[in-house]
Image 1: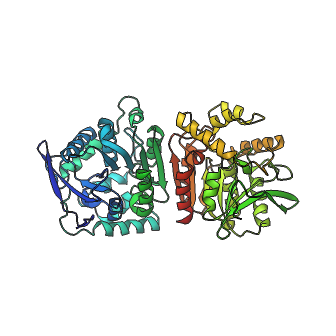
Image 2: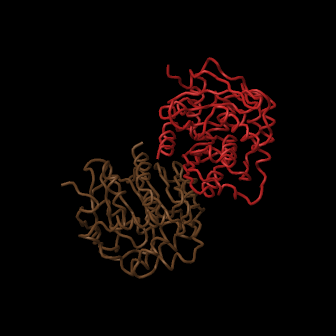
Image 3: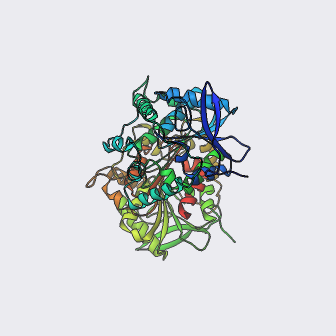
Length: 278
Length: 278
């Protein structure tokens, strides 16, 4: 049976005493595409249209990093440590190379992973994210919505989509797709994960050495994607990433927010698959 | 016989006493794609790979605006007037709607054309360009290279491509393609055209009313494209366009300059044709 986003069973692999939850589906052969998730998110929070779309052409791997949702142990409180745990996970699967799609805080982790383990990464996609010491959000409502105990639809639409009727409608359509999987779903991430991730992205805001200089060391072909109105990680940060990563292509979608790739899944797939296969 | 960039005959149409040179090729049916050219450039200065690529799916029209190269009369000294002459030309051809691709100063004209004649424009592509009162170039060599009497290869590569070996090589490959047409070619643009275009883009640098406010009135789906290192119209201007035009998608290509669409013609065609046909 060929598995999909909805049917792929949750599997586990152990590395350094941590039991990582993951799901693998799509083609058997080819460089796998590894997804790195946003703040508080787990494997169930991707868009089935996007993951299944990629899976037509390559293996797709979703996972929960240390301490997140169905993975064991505690979430570390730095992006650097998250990158190392992700590398442990990739090694435990016996993979010699992956493509990476990092979304939001997952995009921070993907940058660190690529810088520390360059030979493990073939191509890099940075979606709704930014560089270390980028421009912080100016929107006071963001942390309020992002840290509610149960993240509901209203806060989600505020954080991930633009205010227009069409963007909000796309957000609701995504919310439906996101809940298509009914069985073998993750538990929510713990308060420990939330607190550790807040500590990690707070540390990430600080300059370390020359601002943006480390981005010059990312040699991989890179695709940077965002919506035109990201209230969480302002869109200018995507421009900054693309100006400092030597081989970066930038795509900004209209009238959309942090989750532009979930607002325009078919167009994003066309662009991203073209990027991966070019 | 199906014509191409190299074989399409130069034709003429008259409007308000001006004789406009143009070439039309590609499919007979569909909304024509009208190209608006850069400073001092004429119909021979497009990339045959790009124009013929578009021509597979739609009519393509190249033209010289008033006073440029093989068109008669004098070049006006404001972007507004250039937009009006272009509208005269479109009306003279009896076209009720076009798609526009404006490159550099041609992108300024395309913005004005769209704002003043919104019903004539279906979709808009702004390539290597910027808004009124955008960020000016900081590079003193630009005007020096751009105003030499005969624009040679060296200055051209400096102005239109990035300094890397691969970008320069792509520039030389484009230069070869650009000279494939041997017969029925344009004369160079006159010193009057150069002087008037300089006056026009100098005036374009000044704020008129609230900065960038007019961009909100561009309702057409818009694709903004540039290279990551445009020395003539700095790349940040493309980001600015995409932030202020409500329905704009932005694509920035890596390691490339003002003519990124000539550096990556196949990728640009894929992106642009997807945009036009979506």
